[in-house]
Length: 185
Figure 1 (cartoon, rainbow, N blue to C red):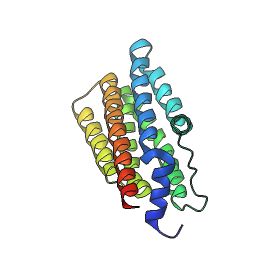
Figure 2 (cartoon, helix red, strand yellow):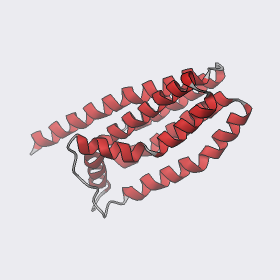
Figure 3 (tube, rainbow, N blue to C red):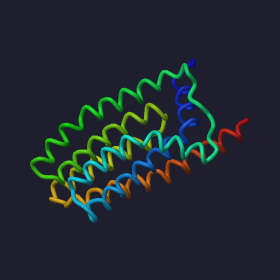
Figure 4 (cartoon, rainbow, N blue to C red):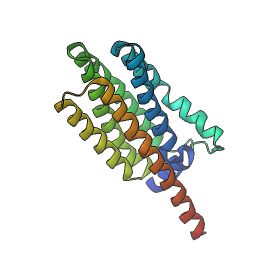
């Protein structure tokens, strides 16, 4: 790869602008809300952790089902940034879990904040400022939910709806960029 823009284009093509991963993440949040309503907040914490670990493989499967067969270029330097962001996020989970020991809803609010912070790095991965907006919206939502003493159910639904909404926007942004790129050829 000879430029950051080329690496970002490669990432966008391989992952549909990140839209499918954001969609799967949103569905994990909604599933977590269902687990809260049917079982307990403790079970929901595990649902979010296990579901979160499955976002990338499920997102990759969804991409294949949608016909995306563009693998990442093995020389793409941004692949390591994606891994580093994932490691940082996982290193932050014990802090969220510690907060859950005080008040279970705080786990979900802190995870929203952590995930929002991770999405800020996706601007560099995909070359798309929508990720700054997504990260900011999740972070501000986490803060608002915390200060309003929101229940875990409200927090998980909020996270899910925000991510599902942004996944749609990211998908259409990718389609638009693809059309513009084709028109320039």
